[in-house]
Image (tube, rainbow, N blue to C red; front, top):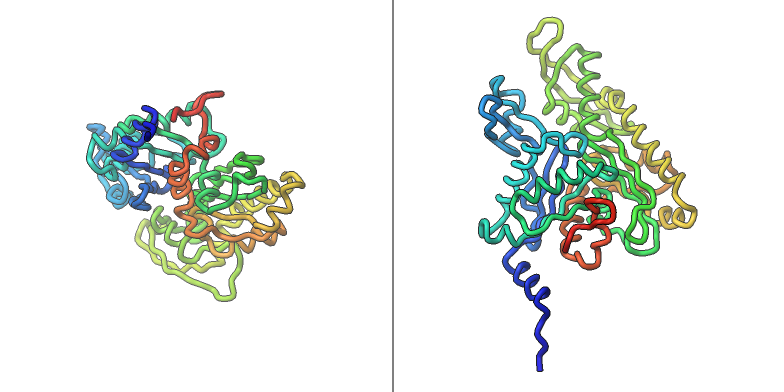
Length: 360
């Protein structure tokens, strides 16, 4: 005689059938959303445009970013997250609701049966954890789980973090750089820097202002960083024309910058990241060093795409270093994989309070 499944198992099967598993990389610069069986369905800027007179949200994501620097004074396009944590709870809540509602098929009925995992920086406070949890829960989903970004990046990079071997992952996002040595499903060493992609953009903006007396916008600085930015000198010099406002005359001005200029601008921040990675390697227990030497340092996040960064890290640390496959999506893919294997990976979830883990 066929045995009936326990009620709890039966309910979980119903929820899985009608709900969705959603992974979210809630980044300072971009928000990525992964849906089980559909892959990554959203990759948009973490930008919200708000009418300050009425408090109404006018646009979110790509549409809001297009408004940056081009709106009337009463319309402000800004990022509700700073250094990877929530700085404006209400706007973050509306942004998360927008993205979750956008990917949830079947409306409210399916959303109430969906599960969401959100990546957060390591070392955030209980208040910051709760802010992310509450913001996601308000979207009306069944369950919300939190996972540290370097752990999610390691899972998304398919590192064997549950085995008794050492792995080191560096997630360079928009607001933070997360460095973690992981073994047996736990973080052995963790370091978090408030130096990442946004800081490099500010470095470039400041350098251009000081050396060329030219004011450029965020979008221009980002384009310069991704087009000709590099951590090490390359065999071939690259150049780029940029446009901005002349500080002295207030009129439009066009100049030519090269990779050496940009390298000079970002080198102090880059070396801070690299030497923090070196310190993490030096603090790694001897038993795990051999594993790390064999497997190497894995770079993830948008900052991993900076030309020559992996080579520079390898030279300074004397440890092989390589970039994760599709580093931009490593965290969100890892979050999705956590939900797919929630029973075996639940120990990796971030507790909301001391000794408390999110209910399954």
